[in-house]
Image (cartoon, rainbow, N blue to C red; front, side, top):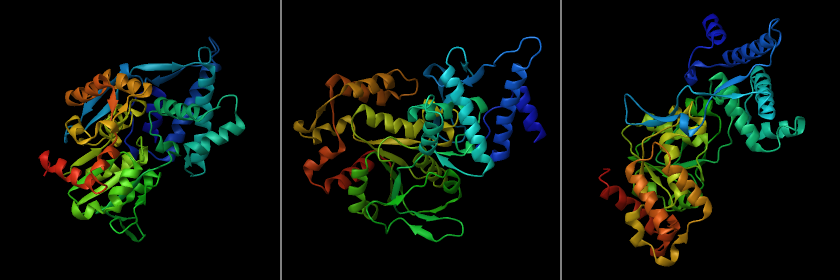
Length: 379
């Protein structure tokens, strides 16, 4: 503890591994931040309101870090700083302190809260500073950047939308086992408590993990019991991946390192962005992306599948699609094959959803997945 406090006072150190943090240590960092603030304010020579130095979460400060012992790459933020000051962005400055104060209280009570719960609490107590969920989310990431900790170590959980099903048995300590191969089509809901997810014992005889972008496609494959025909685990976040789904996928990849992970996403910029988030993490959470990144392979849909789709099933790219494409094309970590696919989407001005494959029948999707895996030499 003494060494930790010395590091805090000196301003040294890096992001601690998740397991190294506990509530006492995070509260100590918050206390030191407050003491530094008061010391600057009470300085007899030049009293001032201190500026908060945050690690910058911008694309310019982002790079890709490759694992030393595996082929997993993740988003990494170097130590370039941005600032929150009372003079230039007063509301954002105040939000940081309010979130830190709330987290300090939550940790002292030994509780965990969801981001949505925090929003309604702040909307009630401080509506002048927190008028939307985005303000809370950004302030939480500011605190993470300031204290160089993790969101979970602050006692904050993100709501989980994720589910999984297939050849996987989950065993919580002192609880009954959950056999995910005998569940209904909705699968097993993934909790947002990362501490609980980290304690799960996992066992499986599957050969593949398939990440599905959409809940409707997930349920179609679960209804067809794809995992009985193709030994696999199906997992979905029902859209853009939440932290809990990314965390359990990362755990699966570490527990079963020889089990390839495939992404089944739409042929559009959003589908590619979703796959990249699973694969590399996100810039906004670059300080802890290594905790969620996995070596995800793009199974489909791909450009070589377009001949399977009737022309009437293609849709025109929307402005939001083009905005996502522009952001991806300007990123530093997009693979050349992915960049070529994205360029093709933009040039054609069209997008294709996975559901377009239903033109061959509702049972065609499982056959499509099996064929793609075999043709891709993933066996």
